Each structure stands twice: as structure tokens, then as C-alpha cells.
Image 1 (cartoon, rainbow, N blue to C red):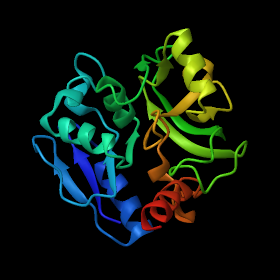
Image 2 (image 1 turned 60 degrees about the vertical axis):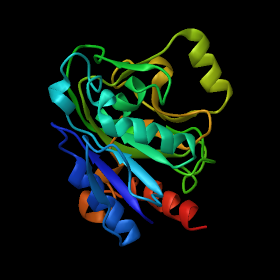
Image 3 (image 1 turned 180 degrees about the vertical axis):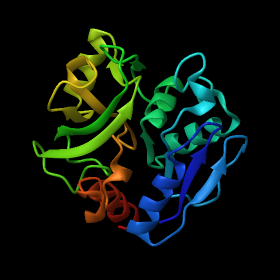
Image 4 (image 1 turned 180 degrees about the horizontal axis):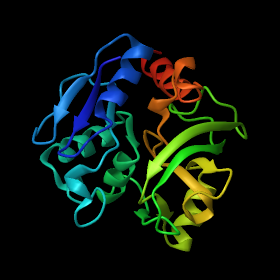
Amino acid sequence: MKAAVLVFPGSNCDRDLAVAIREVSSVDPVMLWHRETSLPDGLDLIAVPGGFSYGDYLRSGAMAARSPVMRAVADAAARGVPVLGVCNGFQVLTEAGLLPGALMRNAGLSFVCRDVALTVENAQSAFTSRYAAGETIHIPVAHHDGNYTADAATLDRIEGEGRVAFRYAEPVNGSARGIAGVLNDAGNVLGLMPHPERVIEPAHGRSDGRRLFEGLLETVMA
């Protein structure tokens, strides 16, 4: 698998994401600076990491979404290249218009950092194929702006189209309908607030995140 991890000023989970990809695929991803205007040829995966790009100024992810590299990411996504956005990466993808909705300040206005229970809602995407629909998994969150919101028509549409990938199984941040992760209409772009890269091996306490990367690897190598 040939992968790239984007790096913005303020990214702090880019190396974690790179380690997870390497652990599963045995290939080091390319670390791609936000000022790049093109992507390496033949990419199988683009990963947009968590962190606090540009210090979360304006809105979380708003400035990173306008980085030069994001134009190339949008073009690649349109060609069907899988794009994974985690936490701040999810915020970047919504701000860039690659995913519907927006991430607002958490209900209660508190930073939330703990393991949370998630329900797998869609097990048929490249990102979720190693899970079972309805399965409960546990993946940590660490965010202040993870309150997913969209208008009612958009929420109805993504629910109806099976684009809710993960849903919180417990109250976490006030997200509309408990949504923790959403897919684009083609199913090749996933944004989620929990951090699967932090739970990929038993030394992390659990490995529920590993199957997300294994599913991706299986899909791109097929």
C-alpha cells in the first residue's frame, strides 16, 4: 500500500497515524507538507491526521482546508482514492467540502479525552469491512470540537444512504444523532472523531482500531 499522511502546522497525530499505517502495511507512508501542490503518483490512501492545525484559529480545520495540498486531495478523492480524516482531519474534510456537516464545540464546552464505545453502522465500506454491522467497539477520543452537526435534511440523507459509519454508543459531545464518523457519497472518504491509530495493538490496551487499517489494506491490495 502506498500512502501519504498530510502534515499541517499544528498537526500532532501525524506520526501516530504513520506508525499505524506502517504497522499494518509494513510500508512507510510519505509525510506530505501542506504547501505541496501535487501528490505522489499511485497513492492508495491519503490520511489527514488529528492535531490542532493552525492552532484551530478561525474554526477547527478551516485554515488547513484551504492549504495548497487540499486541492490535490480533492482531485484524488474524486478519482476514488481513499481519504481518511481523523479528529482534526475530520474537521478539515468537512471544511474542505469533502464531507457533509460541520464539527462544533462540544456540548458542555469541555475537552473530552477518554475511551468511548462506538456502534459500527456501516460495515460495507473500505474502512469498515473488517467490522460487523451493529458491533460495539471502543476507540479513544480527544477533542474539543467534535460535536457533529448538519441540517435535518442532510442528516436524513446520510442516514438513508448508509453513510453514517460509526455512532457513539454513549453520550460524548452532543453530536447530532450520535454520529461519530461519516462517509462521502462515493464511500471513499471517511471522517471520524475517535482515533483508531491509538488502539492498533494489545500494548495500547485494545486493538479495535487495527481492523480499520486492515480493511483498507485488504481493499487496496485486492
